Image 1: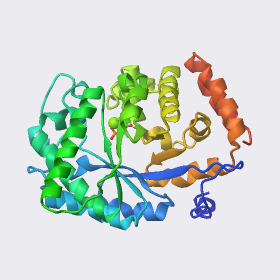
Image 2: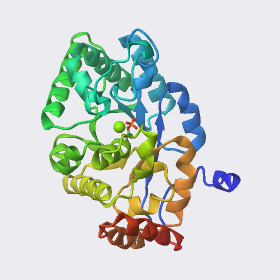
Image 3: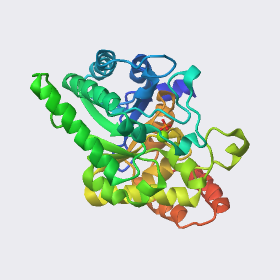
Amino acid sequence: EQQKLQRIKSTKAVTLDGMNIDLFANIEVPEDVVAVAASGATGIGLYRTEFLFMNRREMPDEEEQFNAYKTVAEAMKGATVIIRTLDLGADKQMNPDTIVTCANPALGLRAIRYCLSEPQIFHTQLRALLRASHFGNIKILVPMLCTLSELRQTKLLLERAKISLLKQNIPFNENIELGGMIEIPAAAINAEAFANELDFLSIGTNDLIQYTLAIDRTDDAVAHLYNPLHPSVLKLISMTIKAGEKLGKSVSVCGEMAGDAKLTKLLIGMGLRQLSMHPSHILSVKQQILHSQLTTLKVNARKVLNLTDLEKVEPLVAKLNRNSD
Ligand code: PEP
Ligand code: MG
């Protein structure tokens, strides 16, 4: 089976009726670009930069960060590289010896909230990202947006980082695109407003499911209740896709859902044209796309979205997957 999949490695991910789908890879460290090249992915849809900050005592300085981001950008030779700003906190702490304890880490000072509370750390990362943008096709992605004010503060800090580089005559892409992760239900419900002020959206289904269903994604005791097919999760994803369509902004999924081949036809039918996943899933997802008829997927996705009962969603998705397109 794996051998059979290898044959479609350089085949474009296009449906039978001609819709092209971008299949991108998620990475955690620059060394992962080797796996990306081997996977048949055509870009990087999520580079989780927090791994550069974890399991160490000191923050990486601007030079270390710049080198990591530049390495990835150059390795991808002009293909899209979406780099997410620091998503520290909750399950991703910096130093295991100094883990900050708070009552609800997942609801606490993490991701963009943390970065806005530590503007110097954020400034250093933004400068490193901008400098690296001179060496490839980098886009910046902001995690855990909840309010427009967080987005505006982020833009202000990005502007400041740009000005500091201009003053030093250091080159960077002045038109670098800025995207936001939609992974808090409040952001999905208000996705149009975010789409209006961003260049692209990326749906983080791992956290979106956690926050929508009130299920800690790290707690084994409730893992059986964690379900991407919950009708409310699908509604929030659909709302986000619609917002992107309305405002002409691209929308992707970069959570685990994107790499689950059993969900590919549903996600494409719902309107997604970009999926980013662990490199090992690219070919099985591509296989689904190559056997799909977009017009059929759209009709099927509508049927799934009309259901309000999770117990009916799962069998319908399974049944639609068994059909040939
Ligand atoms: C997500 O939440 O779906 C996501 C892609 O980000 P992470 O898993 O790093 O929180
Ligand atoms: Mg997340």
